[in-house]
Length: 195
Image (cartoon, rainbow, N blue to C red; front, side, top):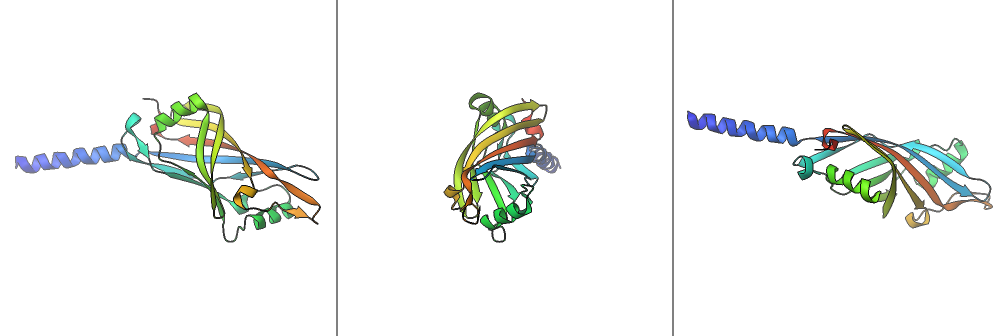
């Protein structure tokens, strides 16, 4: 009898550890992008799909979250010009590659916060169509409030480095290779609470 009670208590204790460690970070982001052309500049906006990073193990300084992926639907990118948007979707080959995505390595949220406050950079892998490149975003306006972290990540994107040919009009007006991107990120979850 005592053995059965002991096994039951062990099982319940293990279950409580799993449930406690099963924290998540829920995120959202708003994207602003801009560039130049031989005629005039342009700007646009987009939103990433809501995303969740799931805890793999541990809590606090010992926690480790799975490799996360953040996706942006190409057809939801908007420059407020239907003709330009159509050319942009064609450049990205949205029919075959509907998403642009960012991949983040496994990380500890507490270490992420400490690193963000010290060197103000966030490395990740950006995938456009079937090409992936490393990106080093500069972080600004970092704010940790309870279990919510907000920041803006800024980085340039070279279209040529992703095998993209900038769209043009009549062979005369052509978009410049570099596009500036700013991403306003919100992460929320108990794992962000400073221990």
